[in-house]
Amino acid sequence: MRALTVIPGRAGSAAVIEVPEPALADGPVLVRTHAVGVCGTDEEIVSGSYGWAPAGEERLIIGHESLGEVMEAPADSGFKPGDLVAGVVRRPDPVPCLACGAGEWDMCRNGRYTERGIKQRHGFASERFRIEPDFLVPIAPELGLLGVLMEPASILAKAWEHVERIGQRARWAPQTVLVTGVGPIGLLAAMMGRQRGLEVHVLARSPDGPRPRLARALGATYHAGEVTDLPFHPDVVLECTGVPEVVVAAMQQLAPAGICCLAGISSGARRICLDGGTAERQMVLGNEVLFGSVNANMRHFRAAAEALARADRGWLGGLVTRREPLDRWQSALQRQADDIKTVIDFTL
Image 1 (cartoon, one colour):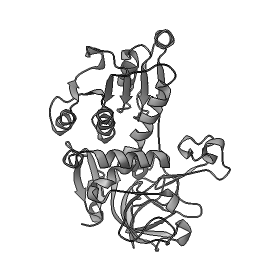
Image 2 (cartoon, rainbow, N blue to C red):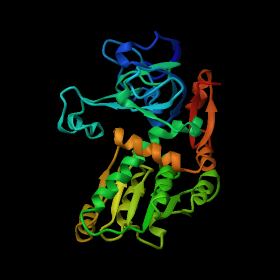
Image 3 (tube, rainbow, N blue to C red):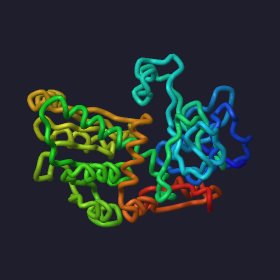
Image 4 (cartoon, one colour):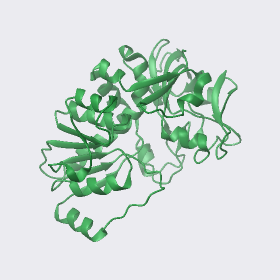
């Protein structure tokens, strides 16, 4: 079968090659791949700056945002042929640490976890893959190709869960939410905020285009400009750009007792210039919280499945702006001006 692979750490090594059929050791459920989403992590792996191959192997099959159809499954697995599914990315470490032992592998304490398509486990960018039933999530059939949004949606499901858990430290009734960034992560964050009945504001640079239109179509208020120009102080911020200046401004814009979740990742090329004393004073005196969130466990994938099933199909369809066949994987990894979510479609 064909798969998109890289030699981790080696730029220019990405290639579609013939690989063996997926090993039974990967799991008893056999899945035919329909699509994999492309994101910045895949770009970093292909560029040679990230990624680890499985032990004893040179190449890594990439792809961690999956959508597939069950071909074979044990009778007691909870799945049957024809089911539309997505695979969970991370696996608990073998020790396990306290978090992994409780099923919270997204919060692994010792870093010995593995990840499909990223760290020491083959990913989903192959014509077929095998997986364990305990790491497989059913997708509503009516979602079709849009089920490929499951993995990024799980990241936001976790972020929202943690925001709400932190909010319960005191009597809490949030009203306003600020989402910075209008990529797929930002737009899904805004969607989940609207599903919670909150007043959602979305901020980015561009005043026009498909991304602002999608934000407004949710019923969110769209702002083009700087965080410091906003005429309000949000109760919740979901920072989805990873841009250092935006991170700092978002922290400083919080309302008293506000919560800021950092869901975007900086490239590391730019440093945050922060007056630590001023920021610390504001956060202490305002009972504010700043935290980071990455990855997701099974609970978050299930919450993401529910959120996607509740979403307007037409709106979700606007997130997937480009589909490329496997043979055109290079094009899929080259960002275009109006791209939001690009997917490699194995059915083309």
